[in-house]
Image 1 (cartoon, one colour):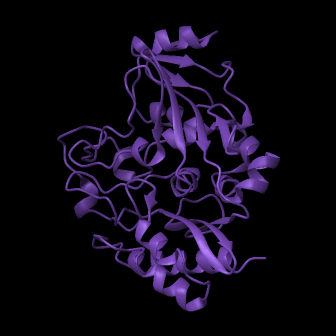
Image 2 (cartoon, one colour):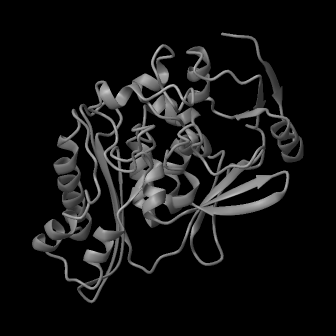
Amino acid sequence: MYPFSFTKAPSTREALEAGRRGGRYIAGGTTLVDLMRETVERPETLVDISGLPLDEVTVTERGGLRIGALVTMSEAAAHRKVRTTYPVVSQALELSASAQLRNMATLGGNIMQRTRCTYFRDVTAACNKREPGSGCAAREGYNRTHAILGTSEDCVATHPSDAAVAFAALDAQVHLLGPDGARSVPFADFLLRPGSTPNREQALNKGELITAVEIPAYPRPLKSGYLKVRDRQSYEFALTSAAVALHIRGGVIREAKVAAGGVGTVPWKLPAVERALIGERPSGRLWARAAEWAADEARPLEHNRFKVELLKRTVERQLRIVGESK
């Protein structure tokens, strides 16, 4: 490990001041420490924010949920309100990583984690995300696990977070605090598509800190769930995944929220699938018809063309599971 300085922030004000000076925030540290060991990332200063008061799950005035950035993944997944109100979030968290990592990793860190692209983590390979202007080895390399949606000539890496897919589906908001004050950003705008600047991954200003993720209130009953398809059931990242939430009243779908993971450079919202569902009566034919829109605008690479059909089948299956559940 290379030399760096480490400081523990006793207050939010001091954390923000250290961040303004270029310090990198760390809490659970499960991802950042790994990248530092591999010399993919080399921050000069780490700012420990684990003691800040950002570790609560609260119900908002309108009936949504606000989950603090320092709530661990295991705590969020087990929280009664999360499990009963938005099971899609609990399921996504429980299908992430190992139990040991979920006990350490924070929610804020989870959505900030960087790609698991092997070329990004191999410092000898060309990677525009790690070293802008160096190229993208994955485009012509082995790209079976890479993205088919939201890609650019500069990057085809997927975003690895399962929880982020659930938050994207539910149109969550990310609450931020920085030197210029507090603000909130729609989750769909927080994680950035690569375009020509794949090294810029989040809509964060210098020194800003994630304080919470807020899920809006939805009409009841809201049925939801998360399906993850991967090469093995043990600790593994998604080839495809689907987060689905449906409000069905009077035998008609009144509200539909759908997003996919493992296939996009960011968690991929599926508005065309949602539009195909709203106002319709649940049926096997409807699930299949709506899922056909899931891979709209897909741009597969040499080794991941199978993801186009796999994505459609994954979305169809999860629509059926959620839509026909009691």
